[in-house]
Amino acid sequence: MKQHVISREYKVTLKTERFVGLQANLLEQAGDFWHAFEDSSQDIVFDTDGSLKRVEKERIVRFYDTADRRLRENNYVLRERIDLNSGKREVTLKFRHPDRYISQDREMAAADIENGKTKFEEDIKLPFTKLYSFSTKQSVADGKSLNKLKDLAQLYPDLKDRLKPYRKGEAIEVVRDFAAREVVITGADFQIRKSPKVEAECALIAWYDEAGEKDRPVVVEFSFKYESTTMD
Image (tube, rainbow, N blue to C red; front, side, top):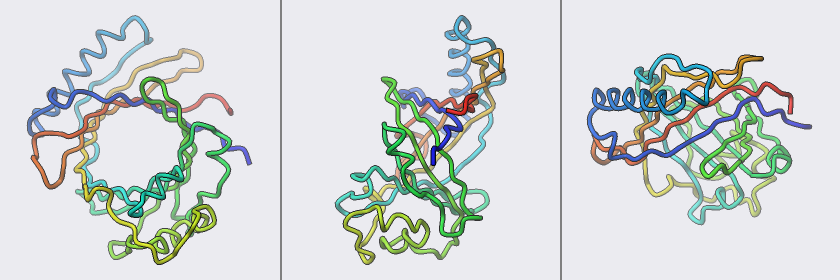
């Protein structure tokens, strides 16, 4: 079954040293970045609106894999997010590939279909590298283990038929033992098309080492995303 691209997202990594400081400083620097973006893009976009001034999400992010990184070698990514305000925990399994037909040729549904949200997107990173992303996220209970491949297969049943070899008792672990505190700042968009009208939602995303300095991000990224207007 052909999957339709529902959205496209562009991501650009920024210089972390431009965003040093606590949250008030980060918001100010995000606003400064947006104003610079407005000035530099005024001749190539139809309109800009708002500013990057609102912390929309704060959460802990971890990635999991086997010791030999077999998920990554098979183009899978397993991500866990925990919202720092609500405590809500969710996991996402993503399959990414530059060939859209390879990417869509699998069953990504959650075991509990009603609990899962599946989407097929196009991700673009500099220098305009295109990847098709087929993913499903789902809420999980605080006590749900993510220690072995069987824990993952209980959430995403198709994985055991795709991962070769699949050993249900094989351990999975947090990649590089790294947990990120993620801050997502939103509130801005720009118009890239008049008819039909298409607006790209923007975000500035900062990652901090949860075990490290609280005022020095290890990654800062600017992203913009818009819904696909074609049934491609």
